[in-house]
Image (cartoon, rainbow, N blue to C red; front, side):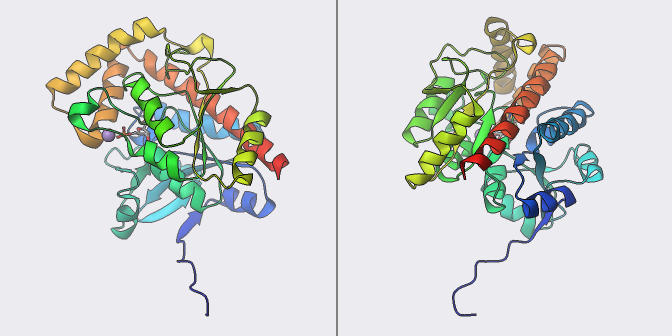
Length: 310
Ligand code: PSU
Ligand code: MN
């Protein structure tokens, strides 16, 4: 070998993803932390399956990403997905520890950041999730800012979310995204969505109303040689939303609980989601599943629209 070869990429593609890659089909990446740390079993597995099926119904192929026994999987076989959904002690992997889990033969779920890294490495351009991590409230004291934001600035993947969870400091999250040069595009409305609710009270920096327009925008970024991710805010469907005022009551209580229990680091987001699940009597989960499904549909349409840009 003369030129320095790229390091090998030890990875396992599901049969479906391998076939899609060979055929040049649209593929949508899916994270797995939402499965292991974001929702209780069995709702998490039902969500994971239905999201995959929605992507297939749109004519694209789903690639759920996770590390199983030290091997990075791009696309999970059905029995692997079912097992992961029942692995409560799976690691929560971000940029800092994705390679650690591989090196040590561990099993772990990928956050938005680690899913973006894996998707980009596998040539997948679009990724559907629920909500991204961001700047936590009181970050000026705790310094808790999700690695998802830095990843959005550096890794070229379109991330379809329902906005930022209102457990975060959403204005500061938008400020950091602007500082880092990440386009934040809301679909179909002027207001940036707040995950369980359609509105955040904040204007979205950018707005586009169709998958084709988003694909066209991304194409122009690439023509200019602009690397880095794009964040899509796709509002939860009206029928499934929990109004912002009502949500804020639960969020404040969940934040109080987290402070009392002295929750820090990686445990914060899973703790808050679980606390809100109980405070809403399970309603937050119904909304969470509906918005991820809605994002999967949008992501599939964007992935297909991107094929037509090339
Ligand atoms: N949104 C959800 N459920 C989740 C998450 C986001 O609806 O479980 C996860 C995502 O994987 C995201 C992570 O990347 O939380 C952010 O964690 P942290 O705030 O620790 O960076
Ligand atoms: Mn954090």
